[in-house]
Image 1 (cartoon, protein in one colour):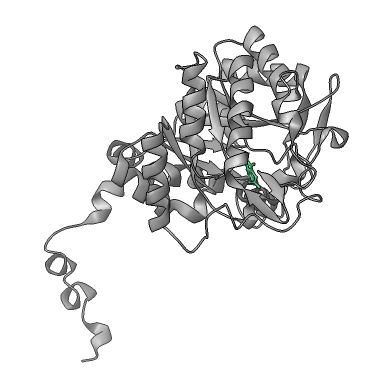
Image 2 (cartoon, rainbow, N blue to C red):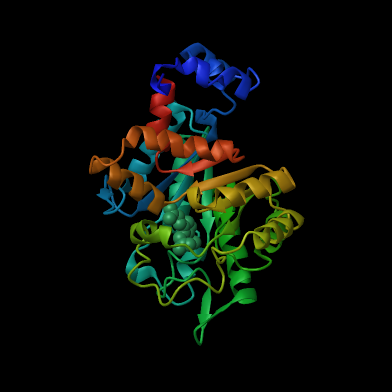
Length: 342
Ligand code: PBG
């Protein structure tokens, strides 16, 4: 008698192998899968990054970011209205500064009538129910494309921090609700907190770009704010080395001690381990930034028909929730919110 004639059930007793446990039982039907689901993405998890530019009724496409435009302030107000309608809690504003306004010190960052400040005031006036977040760093304003002040090829820490506190104050005065220092200088969270408190902005929140890595995934963003072609060298003396995670814990400890209200990990998907470590260690409100390069990657594969864009978008965002994120900065925010609203 050949083994082929023996019924399979007699050869393989799965019940006794697993001790009667059958994991597929819970996965059998849609209602059961929904019932046991541990993590979910909601509209309340979303922060929508938007690029602003000068002009009237302008919308300029960004090469490597399909569906994302630089918007003149009037159109940024429309976008904020859309965010309000959809229930997106926060939009994050990033400026495309006119090249002739850029200089070595990034002085335009301190101009209380710069693009960001005008956008803040316009949006606050028209759409007060949406939270506004702004980036503190000098790169959209410097002729060399660095986040800090540059002398003899070195990024100066303490002098930059001084400049950043002024930038943060100017933004708070114009109506920013969440200051997002993305520069990675030492001591900037504490310095900004002190200046804000001192000037009466005790309620202005700080979301620290806590673990921001020297990443190649920021390429499309740098194009969007016009800092790509100008950047001299790289940002490795201030942004973190992608090899490290212990260092992220130390950065987080410092940011918390210095007064950060929220922490962020950036980029997102390649750094889910860092996100999980920060959330477990500090139990702070912790955010992930799904950066421009991640967005570009998913869109490009989608457009080529190599991946199902809709599904990888959901899966990538859900992964952040699973890794412990309280929210996500993502260029997919309006698309996701529209689908969730339906
Ligand atoms: C500026 C800043 C960057 C991003 C957010 N703020 C670029 C950089 O540090 O070079 C990247 C965001 C993205 O890629 O979507 N300091």
